[in-house]
Image 1 (cartoon, rainbow, N blue to C red):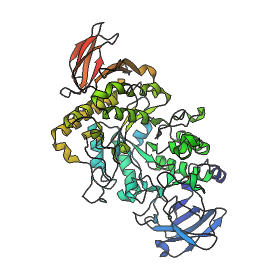
Image 2: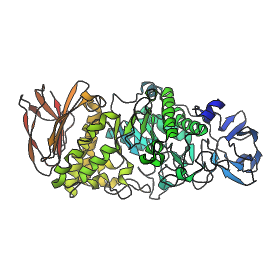
Image 3: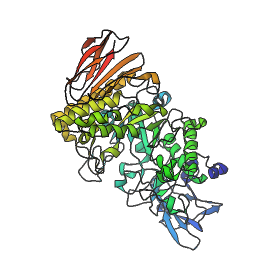
Image 4: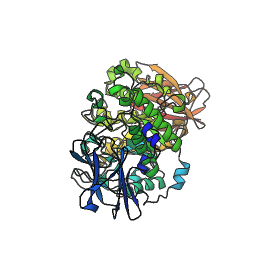
Length: 589
């Protein structure tokens, strides 16, 4: 390892030097603990008796003959006063299931991937469709009613992958799979940044899942947490007896979630985090990372009033630049709700270097609009037009994520104004609006069949809702919509080009009618929406088009792509009859 690069925050492969590495007939152990008085290794191979580690500057190491894959270990780190704490390995490749916390020796290179064809053809999807299904592995489906009954990574292969293909998702995003002690944190309070959570199995089982996805044409993204870490004393917190990964000052060192903020201005911390990010992309063949809570790195404590955190911003830019150099086709997405400029601009042009930014403004404005009773929507009309005022400032991705269906926010279905039947009608039109709007798509599990209750990580999704006709019908509708999105380049080829979108009419305030055109891949598509609760007429004009083919009508019988009626389009336009809470896609001929 380049020691100078490690200290200056330029290393992306620190995990190849630090941690536990099987070699010869044993395992070499190395850890970074500059403030420690001394460090010993304990583990199954020594019957948990101390094995002294040799000091070389800020690093401690030893080699143990007979220590092999599957054995547990910890580092016993003594402070200068003689006290000690037993820690898991910050660079450990496996960990015990909570509440136990020992690291586990894993053979990093035992698994052999068979996804060469996928990896060589992979793109960042800028010019292609990107339809993401966000999933929490522990509550998609469960083998039993217990809160800690989980399918393994491998057991999910025949369960999840066919579902993704059938439903028209070409990418899956998994909530954090790094080891974490608290189920209720959903993986965002991390103790093992290099350890796949033992809830669902081993390193090789996770690799097998990713491999199987690739062989079925499905990309895999993972949530990654580069801003903060769990406070548990056996992990990173005060690892060597001092503030090694965190700030020494609690005013900036403690996050709003009660966790420890990483000190991104420290080179060793940068090398740790960007090595972890590179590890998941390199060793597991993940197709990208969704970076959590980026706004909390851009601004001190996520508050613009406190100013820009220059060290953290520089870290994000440097990390993204290095990851894109090593993985040009991997997707880096930022969860960022700020107006900070250049989030998706290239790092070598002064931007942060992300490929996509979650459009939290679109999400909030759109959901607020659909919460609004229809009689008040004329006054809220431009909540739906505002997104295109700033849309081209970044490469946006439209998210309906887990965060929108928990903690009293209600499910997406329940957010729709009105009674049960009206909610279903609005939900169909709402999703048609989302998929016609420029930007890549992300939908959280359960949304696709109009889950009624909020998400609970202890319970599987309410699949029994599919026995109810309206929920089953909505699920069928979403399948058709998803496949239509994948098949029609007008809906994605021009996502980040101004010629890919044009308002046809965005001044029907009193009617709550919207119409716009999407272009791409040689196609023209007109999308027309009536978000009022009454039937209305609307004259659609589309210069240069001789006719329209109905692709999908949310208020009519669901049609497969291209199977709808043909409508001649004279130069003066066509008079359309719009159903209440309805949306229609027209393919221009």
